[in-house]
Structures are given as structure tokens and as C-alpha cells.
Length: 221
Length: 89
Image (tube, rainbow over all chains, first blue to last red; front, top):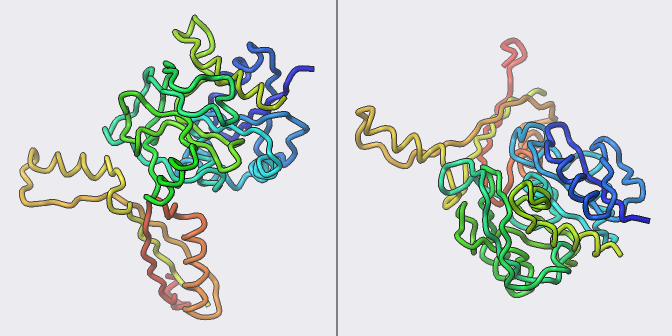
């Protein structure tokens, strides 16, 4: 049986089909999960995809975190289930307290939509188990609030505990310590601003996201 | 008793404020000199039913901290005022 990856859909989410397509293309089975349902119906992993959940009103992710589906995702994560938040999904996970820090507006004042190069910093996370430390991947970014920030104590902790999963090569948005993705203490919850699901097919210009999505599928096994 | 609450939300020092920076940069072009430190925040207003001003302040502060702001990047100042029944405000 193929690995079932639940993809949470909020009003305003717009990358859910990209995520399903990427998962399906790699032998998994993507399943959409409506934000109003508090039942993950037995999925093996969860992707919180990109978009503008609840219009990003108040702050990106601020309202989405109160959705019944997020309570279920929090329980799933607490039980060790792999959860990946991509872009807006990363913002949702920080607002929900499943990941530390916050995403502030890009330092360069611009919405960024272009390929970015990121370096794999650890293979000890549900998104990078099949990757290689030091590997540089070309993965698109598409955000205005992607500038990762956290207090000094949190940053020290992230560094010491090897929880910085991906770093930008040529920081595009001002993120502290070039951080593009981080994981939680248990390493099963990962958030990243780049979109690996949009880099899984040659037609889209890069297949560098494959290793990350494949890692997520492997993390459930 | 009804109280009106105003939540004045500001980005913390050092947090990127592209809107503030863009406005400040435009000012000299428009002929406004000597203006600095432009920041853009947001205000949220609502009314709250509470036994007294202190209870209203405590409830509003809890709401502000748990939902209206993200303490990692934002600070907020609360103004709580009793509403007179006849004014409706």
C-alpha cells in the first residue's frame, strides 16, 4: 500500500494540488484534508501547503492555527507523525507553536518569486532523511513574509541541536543565519519557505525537490 | 459593563518594516524634510463585556497575547475605557 500523505486545505490555500501531484508522482498517495475536519483519517504524513490561509488576515497563519484540522495535526505530531509545512504552511506551524520563531516580511521589501539555492544542513529530519548534508538544491521560493526570525536563545538552541534543516546559499530575504527551514525538537515536524513540491518535474525547471518529498514518504515507513 | 478596547500593535525593534521604510524613503521626494522613525503597525478596536475595568483589561490582554499579536515579532499597547450607556461608545 502506498504512503498516504494528507494535505491540509484552508480557505485560501493554493498549493494543495501541487503537493498532491508531487506525492502521487513519487509513488505516494496525496489526500486532501479539509481544515474544518478534526480527523486526519489515518494518513501516514501531513503536508501543510502554501497559499494564503484565511486570506493571511491578522498575520499569516494566525487564524489557520485555530482550525480543527490543526488540533488533529498537533496530536499527530505529538505522536511522532511526520509533518511538513511549506511556505504559508511553515507560517501556520510557527503560529501554532509546533515550530519556534516567526516569519517576518522580507528585508528587501519585495515579494520574491524565483528559484533559490538551499543547502541541506542535516539529514536528521523527516524532510531530509534521504538527502546528503552539503547538497545544494534549486527550489523555488514564492513569498513576502519569508524572513525567518527568532530570539538569540532560540537560535543558539537550533544551532546546538542541529535543527536548522536548510540554509539559503545567497540569502534572498534576510532570514537570520540564512535559515530556510527548521525542525522541532523531535525532528518530525519541519517547516521551510521554499516549495519542493514545485521542483519535482523537469518541466518545471528542477527536480531538486524530489529528494525532500521522497524523504517525507520514507519517514513514514 | 461595556468597555471599549483599542489594541495598538507595533513591530518590535529590529523587525523588518517594509511599509514604514518605503513611506520614510518617499517623504523627501514629496518635500517633507526632517521626518524619521516611520513605522507602520495596526490597531484593532472592539468592545468587551466585563465586571470592571481590571477584568476587561485582563481579558483583553490575554486575547492580545494569544491571538491578536505574535509576541516573537510584535508588541502591543492596550487602552481600555468604560463606555457610557447613552453614548454607545
